Image 1 (tube, rainbow, N blue to C red):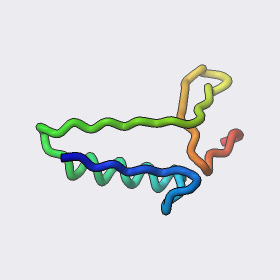
Image 2: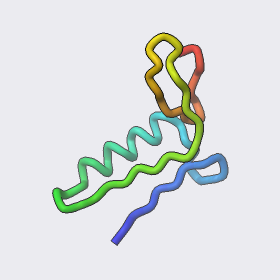
Image 3: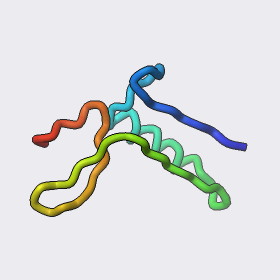
Length: 65
């Protein structure tokens, strides 16, 4: 049994940070111990200029914030 949630520029729900975050929260709350959750992200990311920490960029990511 599997469930696939797909967010992209052409899907019913766009890949905004809050949309993705809400989905991940719902999945982790509903998950049971024997479940395996795979989060696959194909998109853009950035490195923080001071720390070098990597982060994912959603549709509404603002580079300056």
